[in-house]
Amino acid sequence: MTLGFQQAGIRVVGAVELDERHVAAHKKNFPNVPCFSGDVSTLSARSIRRKIKHKGRVDIVFGGPPCEGFSFGGKMDPADMRNQLILHFARLVVAFAPKFFVLENVRGLSDPRYKPLLRKFTSVLRDAGYEVSTPKLLNAADYGIPQRRARLFIVGARNGLSDFEYPLPVADDERPTVWDAIGDIAPIFKKCAAKGVETFSGKLKAANPYLLDLAGVSNVTGFGSTHHSPLIVRRFRRLKPGAQDAASRFVRLRKSGTSTTLRAGTGPERGSFMAPRPIHPTQARCICVREAARLQSFPDWFVFDEIKWHAFRQIGNAVPPKLARAVAAQVRSALEL
Image 1 (cartoon, rainbow, N blue to C red):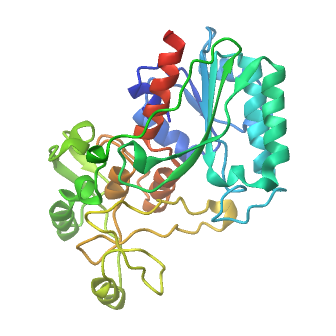
Image 2 (image 1 turned 180 degrees about the vertical axis):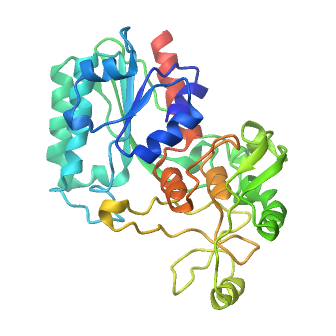
Image 3 (image 1 turned 135 degrees about the vertical axis):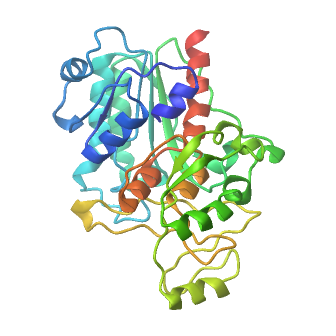
């Protein structure tokens, strides 16, 4: 979300994230944006300001509280303590008193079992003078990203500042395919795998409109290969595009289609399980980190954790930057009216 908001022309003055490895990745990519590890349930607006060394006004508070308790892919447990973090998000919005706030989460948050939680969230903010939008489901595939990824957004504005409208979907001819995103990587991946390296020292050129904002830098990371046994390679090779592998449940991507949702897997506190990863359309392997990043609309200069499991978690947990930018651009437009 930091990247998408920056791309929309918004100056991000600070960030909070619980996982220290994700904080480290944020610092690498945004060295001028103070970011620290903290549990927002224990933080006040004053302590956050002190940590990020920002005394001025805050126009927008945005974030994505943990989604595991709401996810259809998880247990959907209303008693999951992490669910309460959306209320701490609301508390901090009230304390910072921004003109706008943007909350992102998974589709499961709109499930009827979470209505009491959402009512409380909305009530806290309305009592503080905010107009709160009806939760809106946005699919990344409708905003120029080659991935089917539905995410729920809730936007709020101080009373009298409600000129915000959600972004409109892009035209059909602006919808990139899987191959638009990763087609140029296939031969480069083979070369990197043969050399046993994870960084491509050349420059990946923008071969199509989707890559104009993503490619064009040298020394691109994320080409580490995953070791597949000969049996798995044979199984993947026989799998038709769009089909699902019976054993792993991985789906083979279609060159002309959109990717399935890239998931994050679980953290150490939940068993450290790797999320299912799509199978490459033409090569008998799972996609690499850089290909996942491309499908999520991350530019090639963006670096992730050097350990693949953490890198895939960072990508799978992220709001696609291009989707965040579309929402942020609408917020900025409303702010300037």
